[in-house]
Image 1 (cartoon, rainbow, N blue to C red):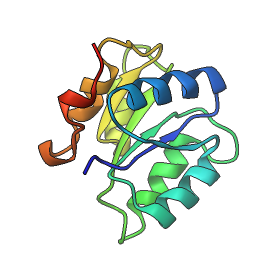
Image 2 (image 1 turned 45 degrees about the vertical axis):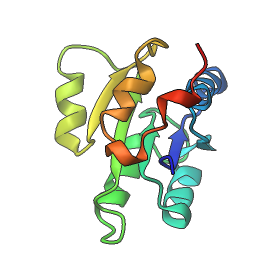
Image 3 (image 1 turned 30 degrees about the vertical axis):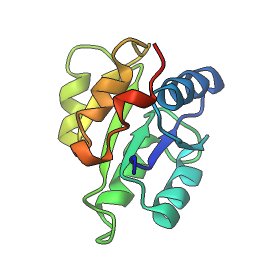
Image 4 (image 1 turned 180 degrees about the vertical axis):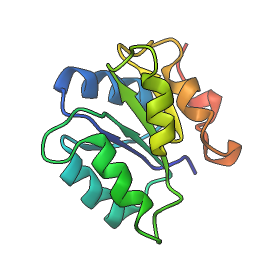
Length: 133
């Protein structure tokens, strides 16, 4: 069984690319286009990994994370920030806020899935045989 992944991203182009790469790798991600919708899906579905943009409408990524970390049933959820914020110090601020990881945009299609899989236990990673060459 592969991991249940949730992508929270308000930019349709970024969402499409992330979803495509994850599907190609053998995952079936769930999608939310703003932080509030993402938080509802987190609470309802309890994904194994959340891929979360930081700058979004309704609730930004920091607010999503704060609510996740303050809810005992989901506080240990793995949340990786994927963001265009890539100035010196941004990664340190993101990690200090409590995100488990940080990936900068634009994402690298060659490494995106592997970078995310580093946050998953081996048994939840998609089998390599499902990936086309």
